[in-house]
Length: 135
Image (cartoon, rainbow, N blue to C red):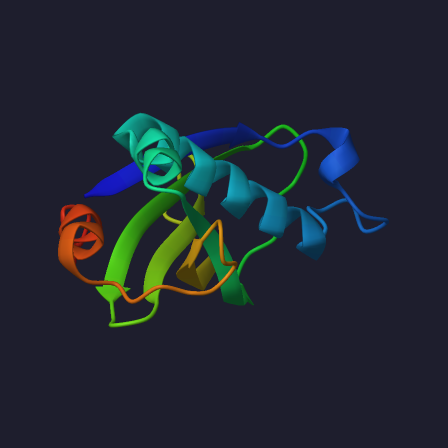
């Protein structure tokens, strides 16, 4: 399952070169992941089970500069579920074009909120995450 989030590029997103600053993409990607989790009902599910979704690695490729006034489409999907971590793939496109501004691979683990330790992705947790898996 793929999720789409729209983000309008504002002046405060820009750097001295008048394109979106590289650090802002982290915020755009996070906004899109939160939107995905809200729309899927996973925020409530994780809270009910005492689990936290914690990012352990992000790899971003910057492809094409985005500028003020453009609308960005951030596509988010689960691409891999392992025994201890999972990967979310994200792509930031400039709306109305085929241009990809950035893409990212985001690795996360699930923490037990009481112990602060990562839990294996198995059983009900694996079933829940597997519902989102797409190639």
